Image (cartoon, rainbow, N blue to C red; front, side):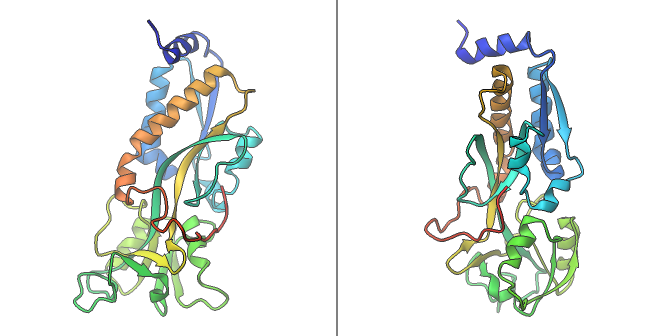
Length: 267
């Protein structure tokens, strides 16, 4: 006997001739897990056609702010977006959390912020963002969530100096590892992270970061067969992003649940 899902899928297999799924994700996510998920879904539903949107990552320049607008205006059907730890799912949309990330400070092994140095300023795995005062920072350009989050604590008179910008976090990490500069980048932006690199936090805010989730419309106006596919794809994305959950600390919420998270914007 077929389950309800199998019955819908069987019907979908014969009626997906013209169904198109328009999918948007950041290039890094496509490279690390989303491309595999999409390929598996296309294999499972052979009559489905996936159209990839924004492969150049232009959406990132808006800090993810256009994601819900794209969905509501039906420019895309499904999107991976960045959001705050405690952010609610917008009305009319469904979502599945993928993984959380934190801001970290990449430094060389002899840097005062490194736990390998005997007189390290660190007292735990976290570092107060105010300890970056007077340091030369390497960061992402404005419009990236990591940069906007850091800028919330810079005020009108930044306590640090931004000496380099790049959209490539591996470049920033490499420079910082061999100099006195500090690269402030997300924990999910490198293939692996070192224990000597502290996670940034702020008083009354806890660890600085956010999470990624996949969003799609819950509207009844979408065909049942397409909604079945999107639900299956969301589960596949969640499964394949598991290594990033482990690398970035596992938790999809801030470790200080009663604190107020800083908000550089919403997806």
